[in-house]
Length: 26
Image (cartoon, rainbow, N blue to C red; front, side, top):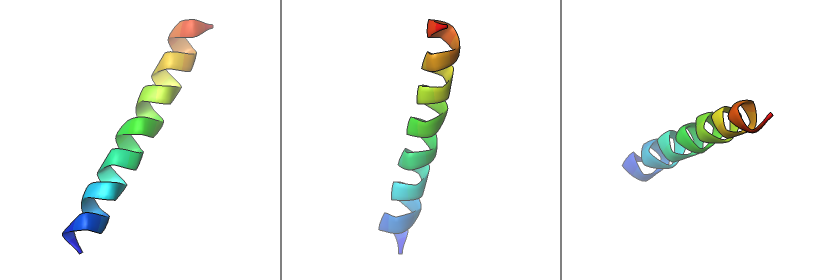
């Protein structure tokens, strides 16, 4: 169960990082 929570946090951080990278790139 904790593994799913950690995976969700990692997915969220990756999504935020990608959105920020795209925003900075363009």
